[in-house]
Length: 151
Length: 139
View (spheres, chains in turn orange, yellow):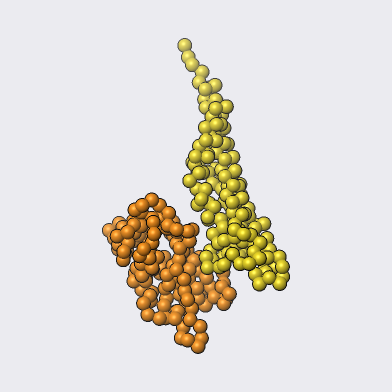
């Protein structure tokens, strides 16, 4: 199933709204697919830390009309605690939001986002520090899966 | 007139143990298959010190691949496998790293070098174990 319009972009927009992370005006706190860091002397177009939502494992799996996709939240920044805090905000945006059956730790389901309908989020892991990037910034990641269909 | 169920129960217990042993053995084999798949795609840095991707630890990650003992706890059978270097998780999770550079040692190198084979083999695990248990029950 082709991701047209872009599912990861729509999901990232939704996470940005839910977690209150800047998606629309530079400096950006949240990117879809990849971050393109502006370099000096240009002004930074990214916050410290920032997060990227990206897919892995190839094209979406599943049988039409639903898709199953593996995604990763990747947060990078100079301060480990700030990275962990931002990653946790992204993680918590993927939980049920104030629904009647919300126990505070249930991955979201049945959520309409722009162009798509999320049936369920699964295998939602906790953020973890994996190391330092070539700029010696902390890297915090967690993975999750989304089952969705076109709206 | 009475019946001695002892022999029947002993046979049933032996049969149960045979099936559990088969499940343990099948799980161990399956874990080894996944590790073998993983070894084909785990990144290996170049051995030439002049290569820009040289790390000085060529093959260390690949050689650290380990499959643990199968553990039976109640109704659950589990086995842990993984790579034991302090950078294994970073190499596994850094999706933006290009492993397909010129002069690479492993042609199929990629991130998610354990998760990819595990997911690819996941659906085949239960039928494999079931078949082995069924065979054990025919002894």
